[in-house]
Image 1: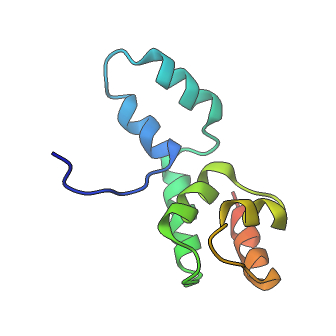
Image 2 (image 1 turned 60 degrees about the horizontal axis):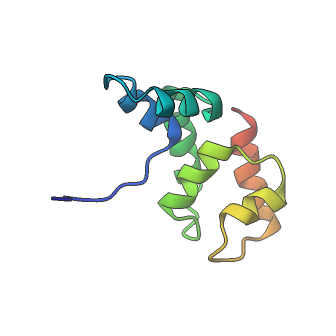
Length: 99
């Protein structure tokens, strides 16, 4: 039975999967594509939420933390439901640059 849904980053999944025996294919995939450790990812998510931008959903925060976009176009590919202003995308990129 599913009790709830919460989007999680690949770093968080990696932390969960590392505690499970087997699953070597998943572990290798996550090792290859996870850019930050769990602690840095959680800090990044907090900073993105602290922007208090109602246009950015939790799913977007997770994808931004996973992909670490470097350009405005990359942010706009992640946040597709709404149009972000240049100021909003720059604010996101400034947070991401720290990581």
